[in-house]
Length: 427
Image 1: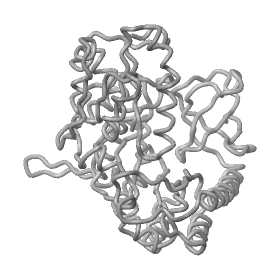
Image 2 (image 1 turned 60 degrees about the vertical axis):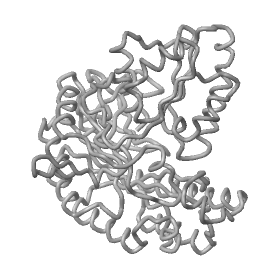
Image 3 (image 1 turned 90 degrees about the vertical axis):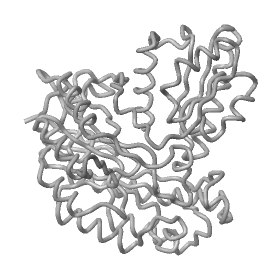
């Protein structure tokens, strides 16, 4: 989401006459796009501000801005930070950036953290920041209506609103015509995408199909689905179109129904398992990834074991795992006690990571001897004699690539694996 937002910001500032630079020393304006979902993300921003303070001392006219979720949450504190921050702009205030920069240049603190019920930036053509020119992100909605008790997103990004499907299709077509061969449709909960106009309703499954039929050469991914909302209709749509990637990111967060209830996730362990069974039945070749939180308020050893057993049962191909981090203003911070010690959180997280490492290794081992279609994204990190790309299942593949180039599709036979990569040869 932050990448997509950054591309919108670059577009707005470019239209106002600004030019991006790869050399921070040459910058007259530094904007740091922020996330508030976890405390360590915010701590990194404070560290980044301290790291660039020398630039501020060296260039008196340099302006520094904090944009995004952290700006929304900590506007007063940011403006008091040793006079380092001149501009503070929330996720719905990016259009005002040129005026705010002018205000900051006049010596005033410039702030816009108002949330909107309408803003989707649908009319803005993002300036692509990615370097490979093959895959890109397209935001289809903003905000979130799910009030998970641990999550700050609804407070800093506002209520859920969907983007006009015609603007989404226009952006995707432009990307395809410019040589991109993969798009990822983004939303806090893509399953609840819902556009209504003149009595007609477009839901996510229809939007997904309309994007997929732009061209069979265009791969389509999406993130993120919510377990309470992912429907059989959507799963059948994924199965119907070969170019809709066979990978679903389905955050479980916990394997304990008791903890899920405290988290206000609106589903149980059994519901989640039913949805996973549906995925495997309707899309047998689909890979599955997840998010897991360990050490949530009142979590017992039994709750933790429930999470581990769910992970093992589902056999996740990969997962993002975190210790619970209390976020100020959330229901969990107001109503519950963060009573699991850091030591126990760390121990449980290590167990999760160890388990997922085994599950990921098993998943990759099962791919040996199989042939996958890979979209080439460029050279591998270690050698210009090898190319790198991903399968429909979102697994990275490295292979010798003489005569091939990025943006092309190639069949690759998987011969061996590492902890993070499939290695093979084109056939």
